Length: 284
Image (cartoon, rainbow, N blue to C red; front, side, top):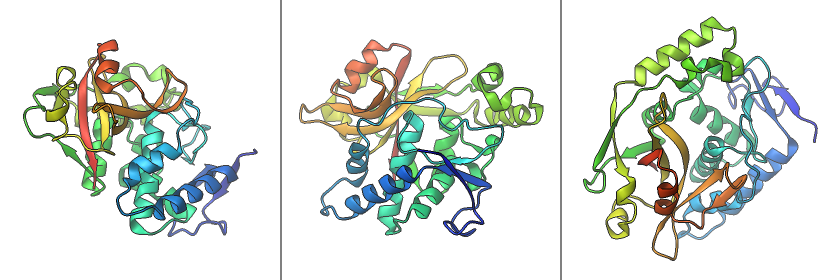
C-alpha cells in the first residue's frame, strides 16, 4: 500500500497529539494498532497485557533499518515490518495506550515518539540509538525501571564503551557527510561510556528457581555483548514457558520474523558466545 507522509497540520493529528515534523505510516498500521489495542483492553484482569500484545505481532516479518527513510528524520510508524528494537517499542507504546485508556492511533504514535527520542524530539541525533541510553531516558520519563537485584542472579558487571556508530559511520546513511550529526553522536557515546551496569550472566540463566525472583513475564531483556563499541546486541520480552524455562519473544533476524522462541534463552545464549548475559528492564 502506498506510503502516506502526513504533516501534523493535517486533520488526522493535532499539534498536541504529535510534536513532530512529519509522520510516515500506512493505513494498515493504523488499523492494526487500534485493533490490537482494543482487543488488549478487553482482556480479563489476569492477562499480562505486554505478553498479549507481543503475541499479536508474532509472524510479522523481520526487516532491518525500517527507520532510515530519506535524508531527514521522520516519525516512522511501521507495524508490518519490525526489527528487535521497533518490536519492543511498538509493544510498549500499545501497552501504555491500553494502561492509560487512550487507544487512538494518534495516542500510539505519540507514545512511539516519546519512547524513541530524547525529550520526544524527532531528529536523528535525538533518537536513542544505544540501548543503554534508551534505558536511561525512558527510566527518567517514568516508563521503565532497570532491575539490578538480587545478587545472585545479578552477579556480573559491564563497563560501557560505546563508539560503534562513530567508528562505523559509513554504515549509517544519515551520518555520511554530516559532521554536525556525527559530533552529536560522539557526544552521546561519551555520555554513556564509562558507566557500570549490573547484569545476569549466561551461566545463571539455567537456574530457573533463582531467575524467577528477578525476571517477570513482560520484562524487557537486553542482551549484553562483548562486541567492540557496543553494549547491547539484541532486545526482546521475557516469557516464562510451560517447560519452566525463560524464553525470549523477539523480532528475530535468524527466523526473519517475530517469534516467541521455542528454544530457552539459556540455550540460545550458549549458541551465541558473544552475548554475555541479560539486563532486565521492567515496564512501570
